[in-house]
Length: 487
Image 1 (tube, rainbow, N blue to C red):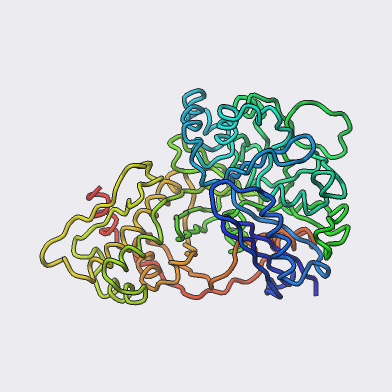
Image 2: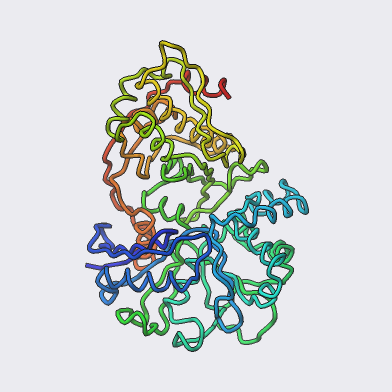
């Protein structure tokens, strides 16, 4: 049996799955926590990776590994390979003004054409501009910029500061993949190349892509080399901290978390993934790149040579938490109440902007519940209106994607709220698509394991996916129409 490992280094924790490369069956797994906060010393990720690998039984018997991770985080390194300052994570919003400045300087249309993105505080480019404006002494020291999974891959292969790693600070050995590079704000998913002119505009420093074996040194900032789908590099000299790692172990390029989840789910063109966690995401696999100057849709790449247009919302599973608190029930009882009401909740409509909203861009909005009458004000209708409102907000995100010509034929519903039976049933009505709810799993780590198996076999594995719930399409356009009219 050939074994491979996939890693999910997320905001909250590090998960390691060791799976059978032929079938995708999980053989063993491990986990370790990450510190809270919107800026984190990457050393905490490195320690958690070591702990999670040990908890998963080590890597001595695996043939390849890949690391998936949270997108956008800014890891800046000096010429000695040391982290200059704690990494700014995707959810650190201090760079919101930097995003506004970049749009004012270059224009949303031009940025969308060049990178597929319109800057928001999440993206790496805005964090680098913040660094330039607020910590110029740190910006002046930057010799390389990496994303979280790029940096962990580099350390795993034996690179880093000279006193911490066997191979030292060889910055030209930094690698990444197109999915995570496409979330930086200075990479084009359409061309597969960095926009070096744009990077220089952002940081005020010239840059170049890493080139292994390069001898001459220059002052340009090094950006990780982008590996094609299915490609890999090797562990050149295992770090002492990872005793179970052997030289020659294949290491795939890794992926951003959403792209890794798409791989883990086996998503293909025509599939739409709706993830309902603390925040909500809607993304689709597309054969062609997309560009949306409104900024609603981010034109990311996926990890398999396609594209991954994505919309993010702020209000997702916590909308259900609010409904359960209001009605003083648990989530099972909330589902029973909602399914006891008719579609449309007798005219009750919730716009679920409890925390403002990112898509549509309404940062200062609040939630509203309208259409109530004496007859419609029942616990059943309130439960239904909360679930329909949450799903209508996500369906608006899918509309923004399909307006760009991306097909939507099947919905894959994941995240904690996907297990609520009312959510899957009502999703088939609100989205008007057949809904599959996969068995709960670590799909980011599983997607990274797909990359690792791909590196070993030379072909993307097509592992079977266990489906917990399948709901046929049941379009109820009146629900969406009432939601739009109430807006």
